[in-house]
Length: 419
Image (cartoon, rainbow, N blue to C red):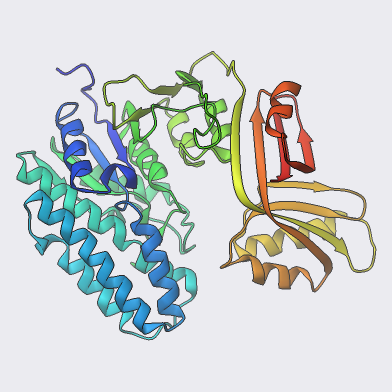
């Protein structure tokens, strides 16, 4: 048995960067072939396909017909070129493009988020069909499964909530044999059969759901980085690989915005003691990071940067205190708009929050809040989170930046800055 193989069924997750071209697909198949004959392989949309499909949603809803057709042609050409490079044929992906064409030929009448899920989900269906077909072409005993038949959610589009009982039964009924299973990340389905998604970058969560349902011993997320680093290499020249992480540290880093792990990934794994490995698809034999029941807490400061942030400050129109009634109203407005709060702070007569700059949702939220509050905001900000901070690390990230808001706890410092 290969040293990475397991008698249990492991789950491998590959993101869009790992399958952005034909070379990436070949590499994925090589990694799977040498490590497991019964892995569940979860694959994201190829390259920047999700971004492209989000653009298609906007052009469709805004009735920009010329741009819509041009974007569809570019998307099809991109996937067909990868198939041609792999020596395959387009028969496997044509039904998905036919489905997309039929959907976009109708006038947009459904709510935006519902349309989004029906369109953007096509990316994972395309990528997994290509990966599965190439695996079979290369002699693997691989089977393609539609994740929408496995993962049941409610009808919260773009943030589907899992029905664990139905999902567990479907997964255990469908995934029983000794073959390699290729399926989609990010996707689910409602009771009525409509496609949902689990939140942007939710493929990690899909891998965790499947591992939880199958009682797998491990999940491996294959990334273009050596593992979990203490900072994003885009912002720091010198980074440190974190060889091991506790579940608690991992979920804290994910919650504060570390992009290497989706925030919802850890809980289903921790509940069953399933280890999470983060490894490099560029150097697949390197050890990477292991997340599990380790006793060792973080020993080096870890930095998380979230850019394009907006600082909203709310003041009651009647100059009343920020009390429970105000907070209830504020939180209900954020929940209704589907806007997540990255940081919050209040004084006697003001409440400030930091959120992602989401042009699809933020303007409507601000309009709703202005019915009861005076709203001011700053755009183009950064939210810097430091786990296991000290003054030296804080001073390091504040060089040439203006500090607008600061919060500190025993282990975590959060800084809102203007670059």
